[in-house]
Amino acid sequence: MTDLDDLTGRLQRLDTQPSATPDETVRRDLLRARGAARRRAARRFTAGIGVAAVTAVGVTLVVSNQGTTSDQPPTIAQPSPTPDATAQLVAYTGAQQPGFVVTKVPEGFVLEGATPFNLNIARAGDTSGLDVFQDKLVVMLESSSVTTPPEGDPVKVGGLDGWLRTSEGGTWTLTYDDGAHRVVVQAWKSLGLTAEQVVEFAEGVTVTAEAQAGVG
Amino acid sequence: MRPTPRDAEFEEFVRSNRSRLLGTATVLTAGDHHLAEDLVQGTLVRMYLAWGRATKRGGAAAYARRVLVNSFIDHRRRPSVSRETATAELPDRAGAPAEEPVDAALLAALGTLAPRMRAAVVLRHVLDLSVEDAAEVLGCSEGTVKSQTARGLARLREVLPELAPVPPPPLEGDLA
Image 1: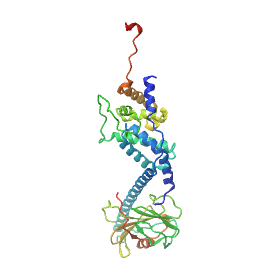
Image 2 (image 1 turned 90 degrees about the horizontal axis):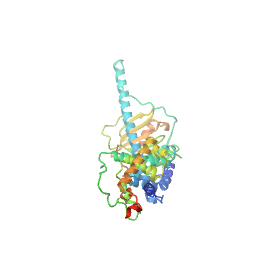
Image 3 (image 1 turned 180 degrees about the horizontal axis):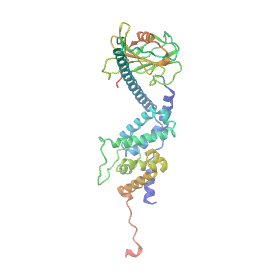
Image 4 (image 1 turned 135 degrees about the vertical axis):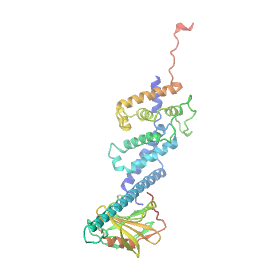
């Protein structure tokens, strides 16, 4: 056997044969991956809020500028969502998830699941996962990284302050204080909820001790 | 938390491929089991995040191998990572667990190669990939793979004393 044959033979023997992976290892890998997916979704969600805030400021400035060239006084820009469909809120009597308790959901929707950071309410049969917020109603605590005041039109949620805005052509984002937390509700535009329905839903939300604010 | 179809597919992928990925990572890191585990965990997370893309382009296993090798090379590029140090002698052990029968001297010798050269040698001669497939993983030309592999093997032969060229036996006439 030549030196090269010996060397390549030794290299080939470094290749390990596949062996069984313990269930616990698989479980940890999945948890780690889902956590990363959730954090990424939260970052995108926060970025969306930032875009919405910038858009809201821009719209307000445009309206204000228009006011200087007409006799109309400056007004707050009003969201004008164009829902894909109409929806009705119905009482929810099923099992609750840790973190957020809800009393109402859009008709035909179920609790998809929850992480310590968000509760997803989705159409029955939706299996897209908890890191996907499209076509869903999502409840979470405002990210602990947010240092700016909420943007949007002032509303009252259960008598407490809230701020409602739209993005993505009609997706609602409601930020409000429940007395102990700053809560964020996002209703995707395809749900067809009105501003009043988003507030009505939020008034039925109770934040429990399991809920955690995301970071980023 | 309700599992999704992606979760089920991911779990199956992990069951089928994790040990092989870890073995490859261990060789790439020249026997650094902790770094190998970190690289595999990072690779699996990136796989999950890009699951649709990972399972479409030539199979998930090939995608994972590409992510793993690139993660290894990127890791070695970080300023905080200590570079290879030239030493006169090979260390006695590569640090592998005692129960694993590994070629510690060869792993240590691999550790003297630059990351991309080491990756080329591992892809070609440990994983037995073709030059074309190795070039795909490394994102370089086939010629680069060939040259890197040849230089890597030459370097290994230099470093491993048992593979040093053996002088030819003396001719009978010389024995007097």
